[in-house]
Image (cartoon, rainbow, N blue to C red; front, side, top):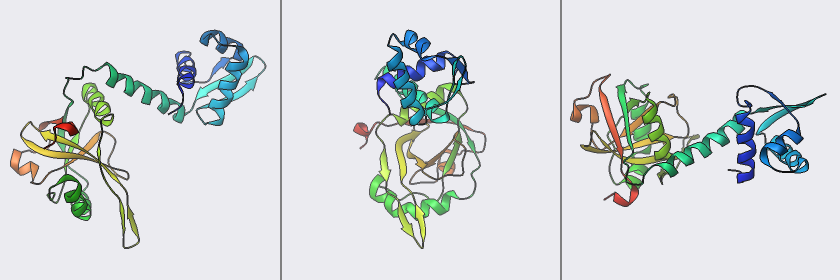
Length: 226
């Protein structure tokens, strides 16, 4: 993440519409917006350009500046951090979603990581994952808050010329009843709104879950993990 002065520069550009389109701007105008000199504004734009945070093209009236995907993600990261900062510390992180069918690959990958999951999580995982689709805004915000907490990491490895990356893990309770873990693989074929959950037991069978059923995933902070 970049320094705060770069965040403010990207924020100023975003307010002028540079997330969605190229905006016409001069360094003088940007300097006035940020209450800095034209020279400082020019240096910041140059830095953002060199870091791949903005694209720019020169015109007779100044520049056309557009935030790149990397620049947009930089602001999104700041936004997520602010969401966490404003959330009262006593608030639980609760994610709600619906059970969906997986891609049929969960059992294979769980089995491949099983010994490492046992070492890191303290249990032998059931051979399969519970897949949960998250669609509502509050739960997406809860996921962002979860990702700002400290995760557990299952280290990657190589096997028969294949590389298996690190897996980021968050302890949870499913429907406030069964302990499990949200696993986020570095490489996945699932869309971003699908969460994969593992547990020592078959969650579908234990909780009598069918496709389309609602479930809640309550994040357990590491200091409360027993």
